Length: 378
Image (tube, helix red, strand yellow):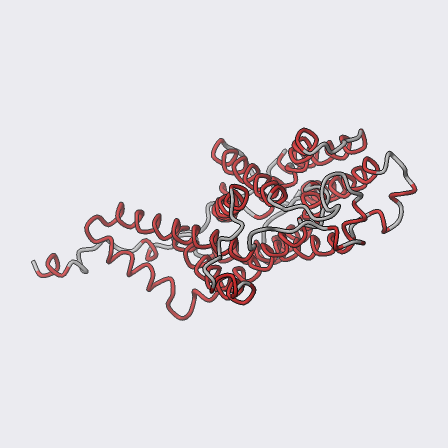
């Protein structure tokens, strides 16, 4: 008949026309194998990316190895550098994420609509972008852009990647407060206590690391000179940016939970590609114009690209189906893993105080996930 010939009328209804809210059992409370797999993958990729960036540095002066943490802040000339362009690396990662998301969205539409998958793609995209709704992704994309580039700037100044992993978790209370205030997420009194225990644990870890680097001297770790203040200030700023971007993304993703995560990702990464393209052109125009955009790219640079792309994709799954709180608590456990890897491969010395601090981190994780949030908030 006519409807069949046109194809449009016969296409299955768009999934966007059947709204459904984010299921409660996919939030923080409760546990299952799927959540464990998501968080384990997120943890592994977050650590792999930080180590990939750290390992891809080219040493300059006394910037790497066992240098004192204070030198990172006091002698910028001794910091390491990158043979490749970090702006090009981030741009490539954003392009990979966008291509993957677009492919998965088209594949999803083909599986649901059969021969009318192109009509489904068109309908979904039109629905998602009407009334300039796609612009909601511009803000988190801009914040993620800043966070990604600050990470490269900071990691080339730090003596070990542990400092980044530890201080990046200042976002824990920020994420908790913003989740409770903006997303109306119920957090029990016990979970609030676990949050601040976790923050105490990660801060104590950095102090323990300082003691290890300075032969156990307490006096050498009492002043600000014992810590890379400039680099740490950027880490803290980056953590606040990450918290804000994560909350904005979670609000957008869960506000339209029925929309395909691949379509939402494609919109987010489209802004990421655009912003990073402009930044790459501005910072490395001479290199790009001369056809040397991939200059300095080796195994290390490509490892940074792949881990960054994979980490971003997995983070979007965690944010949509779990929460930002689950993300930061999971990442906090990375302190223990990162410390162990640094001890094995980078020769970083660990002490008993660090082990005790790591125990506080693990205990806070157990405390947070040990029980459900009751209706009375206890």
